[in-house]
Length: 408
Image (cartoon, rainbow, N blue to C red; front, side, top):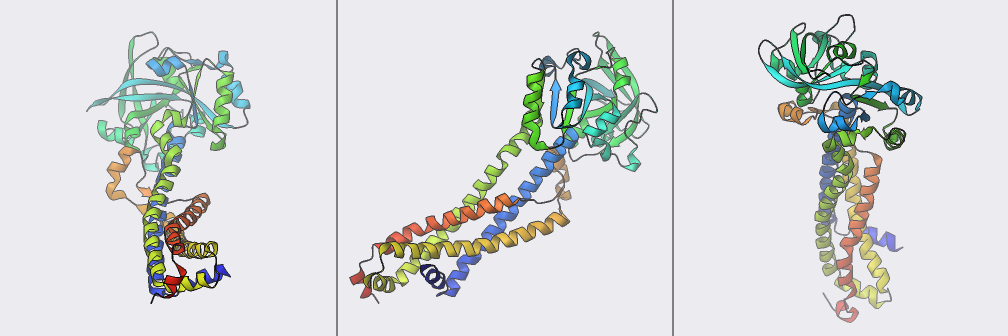
């Protein structure tokens, strides 16, 4: 009975209740949609970082990470690493890479770059970068010709290079001698990270190993893609235990900025929504205090005829929770619908393209929220409704029934 009475009470003054409900509705709509945009942006960035830049796991010689010397390699044969990676069921694909710093030169300019020597078939199974080359921008390394190179669009603009242009790489080989060679641009890729595009180029591992005076079976880096991202910690621990002399890092350790975003985004979103709900909670408190003042005589009568303090407290609390839940449900439904629509159409931020690309974020955003967020938000709304009811309910309990009855 007390539940029905509380629901009817909030509609005794429809205008005031609707104002509070609409305030909560639009507050939650804005909060949910803002959270969806931030979540979608972060999810896209994390997905692209793993699929195009870092893979799930990378393995290095620990000394290579400290000094970036090409002599600090991983020998696939002596370490039994290839056999282990081929037999792990969680591993979808892996690719050995020669990785070193070089000077990239064209007829117009020069710049420092990171060169990756890869086996095209293995690399295409690990990285989606080959899909970032459009038909008019050439092809990925195909092995038909020697000394081919794939570069980023930002680097092509910086060095004024086009398809089939020559690019000269200058570097130090494994013997410490200055070496170099001319490479023909066979493909130009484009990602949402202009800094990455400007810094990284890809060549055939066989071609570059010869120029570096290295054994083709040796690599500075092993990139590993898993079947499921949830298996990341398990595979990392297993590889680290099997090969203690190698450094096994996951993508969060390789890209700590994006990794931090992945770890703390949900906490940040809940804090963001908590601030919104706290602000709305003060509105509920103010409304319920007005209700107590207007119904002083009524509450005194209820107390005088035998309604105990616990039931009075419960009635006031339920009214607050009903107000907050009604507005919150409407706000979350509207927020979910807006999120679904914009996730389908996307949000074009091309006017801010340059700034977003330098940070590695896409200019077309697709908002996203999972059901866990809405469940947690519902619990938070109920909690705020209960907290907002405490002060008004305590005020109602302090009323003197005899004096309250005489109040006009």
